[in-house]
Structures are given as C-alpha cells and as structure tokens.
Amino acid sequence: MKILITGGGGFVGSYLCEAELAAGNKVVALDIAPPVKVKELLANPNFKYVQGDMLEEATLEPLVAETDLLYHLAAIADPQVYCENPLKVLRLDLEATQLALKLAVRYNKKFIFSSTSEIYGKNPKVPWKEDDDRVLGSTHYPRWSYSSSKAIGEHYCFAYGRNNFKFVILRFFNFYGPKLDFVGQGRVMTCFLDKFIKGEPVEVVEPGDQSRCFTYIDDGIAGIMKAAHAPEAEGKAFNFGINVETTMLELAELMKRIGKFKSKIVIIPAEKKYGKGYDDIFRRIPDCTRAKEILGWQPTTSLEEGLKKTIDYYIIK
Ligand SMILES: NC(=O)c1ccc[n+]([C@@H]2O[C@H](COP(=O)([O-])OP(=O)(O)OC[C@H]3O[C@@H](n4cnc5c(N)ncnc54)[C@H](O)[C@@H]3O)[C@@H](O)[C@H]2O)c1
Image (cartoon, rainbow, N blue to C red; front, side, top):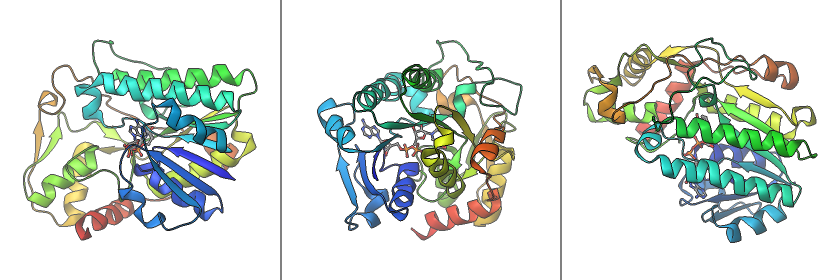
C-alpha cells in the first residue's frame, strides 16, 4: 500500500513513517522542514522524503494522486505560536487542511486527520467522550485559532463523508517521547528540559495545578495504525490518550527526579510565556472507551517509564 504523510518529518509523523514502513508499506513524507527526525529512514528504498510546502497545490496534488491513503499531520502544534502568530495557525491548520481534503476527495483517497484534544476547549465536564460539547473562549483570544481550525477540519470530514468519502479523525492527547521538539522550543516537556539542562529555574505557568494526560508516542502510534487500517474505524472520531492526569508542577518535579536535575521550579504568570489574555484549559482528560471497544486499543506506558526514555534521548544527544 502507498502512504502519504503530510508533516511526515515532524514528531508524530516520524514515528508513523517508521511504523508504516515496518508494516510493509511504501511511504512518502511531505514536510517543509529538513528530514532531521527521519534521517535513519532515508536509505530505505520504500521511503521518500519530499521537502516542500503542502500549501502549494502543485506540490501536493501529484503526491495525493499517487497514494492509497493520506495522513494529514502537518500543522502548527506549538501553543506559543497559537498566541504569537494565529494567522500562521489558520493558514496551515485550516487552509492546508481544506486543500488536502479537496484533493483527497478529488482522487478518492482515504483521509486520516490528526485532530486534537484542544477541540473540547475548556469543557469542565471531564473525562471527554468523542461526542461531548466543545466549550471555547472568545475569538479575541488567539489560542482558540488552533482548536477552531481543527474543528472545522473535522466538520469537513463529516460533511464530505456524507458522499462516501472515507475518513478517520484522530484526537491526540499530549503525545510525548524522544524527538518531540527541539530543546527549548515547542511543547512543555522540551521547554522544561531546556531549563533543566542549563541548570536555570524551570518556569511553570501559573497556577501549576492545571493538568494534562501525557501519552507516550509508542502507545499513540499503535492507536493511529489500528484506526487508519481498520474498516470499522471509518467515518468516526477517536480520542487517543491515557486517562492519568498529571499537573504541570508534578511533571516538572518528576522530570527533575528522573533526570537528577538541580534546577529550582518556579511559578510564572501566564502573560510572561504567552502574552496577554491566555485562556488556559485546566483539565483535559480523554474517555477512550470507543478506541478500546472498536479497536482494542489501550495505552500501557506510565509517565515515569516514558519520561525516562525521553530524557535519556535528549541527554545522550
Ligand atoms: N503531539 C501531540 O501531542 C499532538 C496533540 C494533538 C494534536 N496533534 C496533531 O498531530 C499532528 C502532528 O503533530 P506533531 O506533534 O508531530 O507536530 P510537529 O510540529 O512535530 O509536526 C508538524 C510537522 O508539520 C510540518 N509542516 C509545517 N508546515 C508545513 C507545510 N506548509 N507543509 C508541509 N509540512 C509542514 C512541520 O515542519 C512539522 O514537521 C498535528 O496535526 C498536530 O496538530 C499533536
């Protein structure tokens, strides 16, 4: 089977390329960035890396035309960018998704859409099932550009799906692991790690007891592979996440203990990290009954176990 992965050079994409190759498929990764995270795969004759912009239809169209299945992963997934450059988020997470969908429909290709736990917004009634409400803040707050873009992408999937378009929606809950982001950039773990490595104070955004469910990448990839290839998954959305809550302070303390780091852990105002008007989500917990019942999927990696592998990777590098 031929597989196309937009964002195939990113964190999740790099693991997915590996998993699809291991499953005996031919993989094309399209990514605007150089192939740093997939460099071990470049010698594989079943793997092709196309460094290009998926917003350019002339680049994307021939790749979609040739594939059997399209994973659309390319997106801005960094919370700081949602706040600093919401236009960039809308351009990629919404407009590029529209383009990928249009081409997948035109060439009748199965479409696997990487959505997000962010689409539930700040619905306080956790854990969230797939059909639960979305509770969002004002459009005045740029952080909702990400959640809204992904939700519109999901609406397109369901709308095209009325005409026999095959799709699966995957909502990831804080995947992490080796190769997550470059140290000092991106998501919370690599930001904490930067400070720990430098011995500087680790800055936890106030109040510190906001929680996330950190899901190890190997568990996530196992779920994605099942959902993408099981006919029973078609036309549905799935939560993929562990149901163990960890507060930001607990995360920082656990990382400090595992890495035997010396940094102090301090609380900082949200404004210092995200600028004015950051509208945080305090709890974000998945109910993955659907993935368990339909796909037989359950995450098994504890945060301690996953963090050891993650910290080892970054410290050895
Ligand atoms: N990692 C998570 O925990 C998580 C959680 C929820 C949702 N997601 C979603 O999963 C997907 C993958 O996330 P990730 O963690 O691998 O993010 P990532 O940032 O590591 O990967 C995204 C990739 O998209 C590429 N890209 C950006 N602009 C592009 C363009 N114009 N053309 C082609 N490629 C482009 C980037 O270079 C990057 O390699 C995203 O859609 C994200 O929204 C991830």
